[in-house]
Image 1 (cartoon, rainbow, N blue to C red):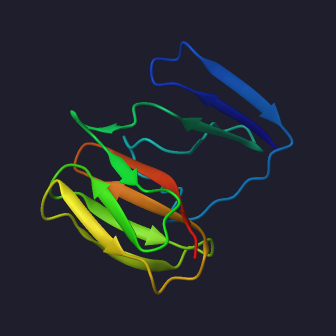
Image 2 (image 1 turned 60 degrees about the vertical axis):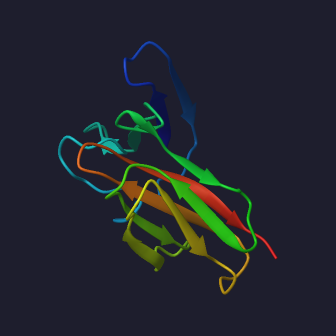
Amino acid sequence: MKLSVKNTNGTNSETKVRYIEVLSPILCPKKPNKKGPKSTGNEGILEVDMGARSNGSVETKVFPNPTNSTLHIQTREGTRFQLVDLTGKAVRSGITQSTSTSLDVTDLMPGSYFIRLEHAVSSQTLKVLISK
């Protein structure tokens, strides 16, 4: 497996060899005109666009990370979010009602999770650690 990573404007890139391909419909959606992993047509090669970490003109923040009680999301109002475990199971989901949203994670098992944030013009997935 070969992994190529480049920024949005293509000025910086890096290629790594011997990566494992992991495809999940939640973490790697195949939607046209959306940022995220995409096939290049070459078998065994996955390209990931590591472009802007902002949701439109509003910077997205997810904190504290790691957390053991409450996860705070600062992003654009109306952003869909989904917190998933490593198996791809959604453990929290919803739509932000304001620019600041808090999620109670006290009942979740410690470990790694991913939060997918999706708005009309952009989407991103961030890793979140839950500790006890």
